[in-house]
Length: 236
Image (tube, rainbow, N blue to C red; front, top):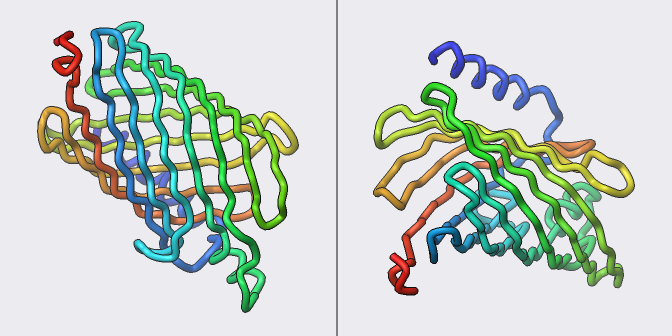
């Protein structure tokens, strides 16, 4: 187990210094995730993220996502959902182009997605494979343009229980465009987690977000709250 953790951490540290950063600021993502059971086979996914170019300042992106999950069994989940994303790239663009005025206005996106999750366990290691297909409807108010884009994503996640309370979480996720250049981005993540209660956990970690030409360092703080809501529907 120690050898495996050493290998994973070595890979993460190598990738962290192997690419040129797209900015000299360490940004932050503040996130909430919820999976609320409403019936034996059905649950609702809720999610909210605030992303910043710096630590909790210089706003970059708001992401709101929800979906309906169908639990095929304990290790397989199918989801269909919707997301709204509001992006403000002005801080980055103005800094890169050395502009006195913002380079562009906000970008909004409506997104539909379909998703399939498979879980398995190897010794004490918990693995999760997430496959996601996205249909993206993007409006750039500054350029007065609208576009429809399609993208697929695959995430491999590994959770390492340390005790009943503490755990480690790692994942790598690749984004592939279905038009133009295929490679969109790759996210490599490592975190320490705490199980506060049976349905509440917190993670604090580091994300390396790599694009075709630049990559970004982000600290992440995530809250996962999964109360069972079947009692509200008379199903529990």
